[in-house]
Every structure is written in C-alpha cells, then in structure tokens.
Image (cartoon, rainbow, N blue to C red):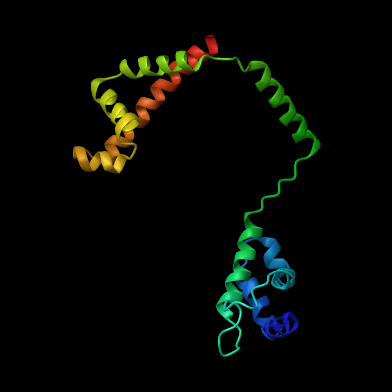
Length: 179
C-alpha cells in the first residue's frame, strides 16, 4: 500500500481523531492541544511500515479503525507517562546538598554483620511474631498463601509482619546511627 493513500484514508477521520483525543485526554496538554497529538500520530504512522501487513487495512481495503484508535491511545498514554519536573535553582542546590551529605554520612558497613543483627532482632521478638516473620521471609513470601495454609486471617498476618518490621527497623536504625 502507498503511504500517501493511507494518510488520506486516515485524514478522512481527522475530526473524529481530534474529538477522541479531546474526550480521552489524560493530562492538561492533551486536553488543550488535541490537534498536536493527532499530527504526531500522522508522523508515527508515516514512520511505521505497517501498511503492508493486515494491521492497517482490512482485506476489503477499509481502514482498521481499531488499530488507528489504539495507536493514538497508546501515543497518549506514552505522553502521559513522561514526567517532566521543572526544578528551579534553589531546588538544585538542595539536591546537591543532600547528595553531599549522603556521601559524607554513608559509612561502609559489613553486610554479613548487619544480616546477623537483623536475625538477632528477629529472634528477640514474641514467639508468634518470630514464627510469622520466618514463615514470610524464608518460606512463603505471600501473605494470602500463608493465610490459606495456616487458617490465620490475612489482616492478622499483615499487622504482625508490619509490627515486626517496625520493631526491627527502629532497633537497627538506632544502632546504625550510633555506629
């Protein structure tokens, strides 16, 4: 198929495509400038070589509207996922200061020693908390599956593990800061 013919065929749907973008816009830019997304769609359409395949045209020669709309929707989703953050000079100073403080404060730690400290903190807990944490960490890392096999509610398992993790974090955080 000829690319020019394909663009002409899609251009017949131009008004519908603009309405589609305006109706299904995911952010303010798409809502304010739907024509830009349709034009970008045309560019992408020209760049892709899908005219020969059965994606763009049906066997009877009509345009596959589902393909057109899904491609346009994917273009909109990709644009939405792009996150642009505008940081002023003051924000950049804070980021650099944070990086420098982090580099200064980071102390090389022996991972084996810290692993042992985590295990010791785990073993200091109540027997039920210890059993639940061991089960969650070493055997079944899925709370729902633990619930099925032990007949204990997921809520209880979640609260127990959360409480255990919090206790371990506070113990090790205090140790880490004093080290």
